[in-house]
Image (cartoon, rainbow, N blue to C red):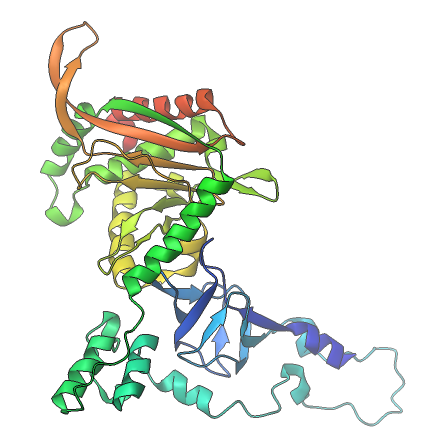
Length: 410
């Protein structure tokens, strides 16, 4: 009985899916060791995918019984990474009935070791790997082996002190290793682009897109924002990009069928808005992590989240939940001098919003007078299985109303 209860209390922590395009990931570092206590939401590992490095949370509570995958090992999504033992009452109390006669003199005063199924000592390598705080990317490790360089002895120049392939090559040159070029390493940018291409191909093949566009008067919102920012220190000023995100968050209320996932042949509306933001990485590639619960955030909170998300995306410090939770995505090419963007939906989402570069253009005011206004082109790509052109137009009109009444955006 006790063995059965303890088996039920042992859970496998699996390699999570950090996006619809992820098939496998590499463990870069563990932040736990056998015997560590973990709680829901704790960061327990750093994982590298084809698109980015990110921090992985855990959604169980208990004690780490065993680490199953070593640092540097690449495994498929769904592979068990560690064993977590629950501290539930069923697992921590012996199952002795109160009505039992006192005849058996073996009440077992101590908890059984089997209750955590950790009788075999954890592999000696696991604690050492956890204590080792130096991060060596898998590519750097492979090149180090080829060039005979001790990567762990180097000083890393990558994010958070990570030892990169360039660090290894520089060390090899300084030690006057043979000048033979190592075997060509996989081009990270090309690899990322292949992943994106496969996802976009799937999107265009499986999702019946329809497209809408609208020219929106951005002048009232920009004037309001400029006046608002004037009395603030630079570090607390809000960028126009955050205004657009806030307008989208408000507009979703008018068209909830824009926000959610299409899975297993049906649309599943999301009660929360986790707003994906397309971010171009310096090393190449594109990712769209989410601002979680974006509709519940004020304009200032959205700006702080946007700034934080961009910094962590480029430093490889995104969280798994941010990469796998998006319910609607926004791509803003305002810094790239383009008029509009006709974006492709990220499955299993059902829509993506695009914004071009705000530009001064001729405009007819409500009285028919010609004037110059700052105009932004907004586009919507949506899944025709879930919504239609009329509902998409309602959504774009709601964005326009929000921008024309910027005081609502605060």
